[in-house]
Length: 354
Image (cartoon, rainbow, N blue to C red):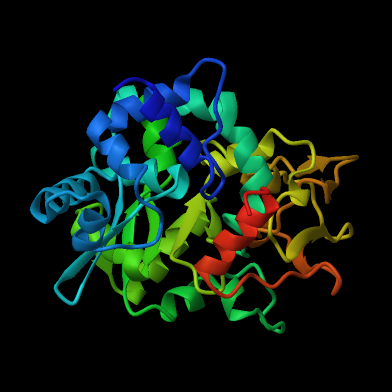
């Protein structure tokens, strides 16, 4: 067997989520060789995201059940497959590069893989994230940035998202962990990514995260808000995860920052405005903004609608209450897809995969 199996694997991964585009340098093949043995690569290419039992896979491939079951479980333990344990039965499925292969290395992330990932993001994946950002993660207002007199949809409220879940798992941010191994650590909270549902259970099963109460989840959200992190759940009303991102390390925000008009690329229903009479030019908002959306003009803060993604981080620290978040016009408001399946379908349709 030769590199062709890895090229086949790359093409398969390029069909999922935001893709896995090829590069001139071949860094994507080096990543796959780092993660997958040839045998594991071959088995992955014979799977789809549809979850299957070892018996079903073995029957289709004409291989012994015990042998296939062992390999599937070993791959799931290495973060190469998704595994759902339910009712005494395990089912397995193929996963994207993001969210999937990359994030599932969070438990045992090493510097050499972090360097590979950093290079790949810079060469190809930043562009892929720009193109798919809106249907991957969406920006919602941080707590206390919306006036209490105005209703906020439950899917735009981080606490309500957590409250609606049967259980919550918290895990380290793979982006900040990668940055700490390859460049300067930004120093912001690392344990800041929430997982829900079957994804949360997989993180628990592999020891990649820990189960927390709603009260602790709210405390962590408060810490993230104070540290200047942007709250971004998956683009669905019933998300399987929710990140708290910084502009220094986060793959999505870093990619968006490279675009001249990031506001056009994100799924967000709010933007910040300045009340000129109240602004005292303290410039605190300049440091809080993760998108470089705020500048000073004649001692007055000015928000660029081309760059503001409506996170609200500037609002909650303005000492003069000169900033506020307002909803976009009715024609620009967007309702996220109901389910993660619908989210994936919309992303695939936007990319022309289906």
